[in-house]
Each structure stands twice: as structure tokens, then as C-alpha cells.
Image (cartoon, rainbow, N blue to C red; front, side, top):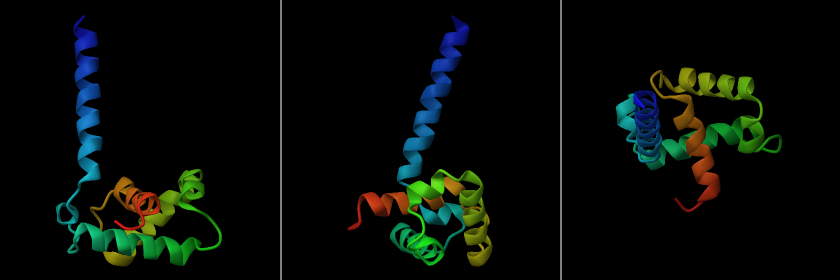
Length: 100
């Protein structure tokens, strides 16, 4: 029973973590931009690398390439604390909601 309770708590904690990632503040990752500016910048980086070649969905099907893209973005802009999921989520979010 204790195992089930611990597992349920872990699931709830994981859900809270992922839900919080949707409404991130770029400053918490050492980025001196607001969320919209960061999303714009990540989309520009993606487009300059993959326009006409891959969609973000295709990039995600190639995890090593996605990791390399994230590492390149971090190095280029000095965003060493910016997690992969924020970089990739930013691009996906814009694709799903172009007016955001």
C-alpha cells in the first residue's frame, strides 16, 4: 500500500512539474528575454536550421539531432541553463498557436 501511495505522489509531482513548464519564466533559466521573445528566437533558430527539411515533429523523431540542436542553441546564445524541453516546447507551442 505504501508503494502505491509513493507511486501516486510521484505521478502527481511529475504532473505538477510538467504543467509548470507550460507557463515558464525565461528569466528563471538565465535568459534575459520574456517568454514571447524566447519563443520567437527559438523558432527563428529552428527555421534557420531546418526550413524546408524537417518539421519540429520530424526533429523529435530523431532524438540525437534534437539534442544537438538544443546544444547548438544553448552555445550560440549562452543559455546554458535552458532545458531541452523548453527549447523544443517553444517551437511546438508556436506551431500549435501561431498567434501566441
